[in-house]
Image 1 (cartoon, rainbow, N blue to C red):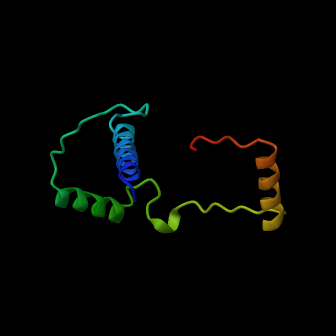
Image 2: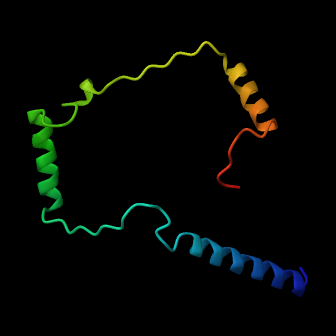
Image 3: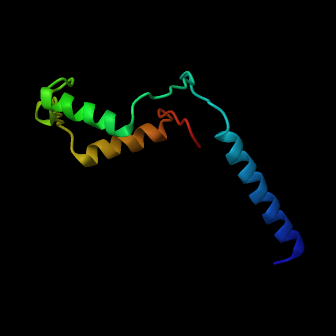
Length: 98
């Protein structure tokens, strides 16, 4: 590897690391940055959760009561894949990341 190639590779790596660091540096979402100090210990939270499950004081009571979502399709896997390819070729898919 020549000196100029090594320099170019090093510069590219440095640039990529700066770009990656910048991408994750801020809060780029719309969620508020809320700081909350817990007044309970981990053990206390776990004990409260266990008691709530035991008492049935959770949104669904226990795992057996969670809603079951079912879905049926009349299309085969091949048909769905063909539709995907056609949508790509027609430019109908939105790409958020490249």
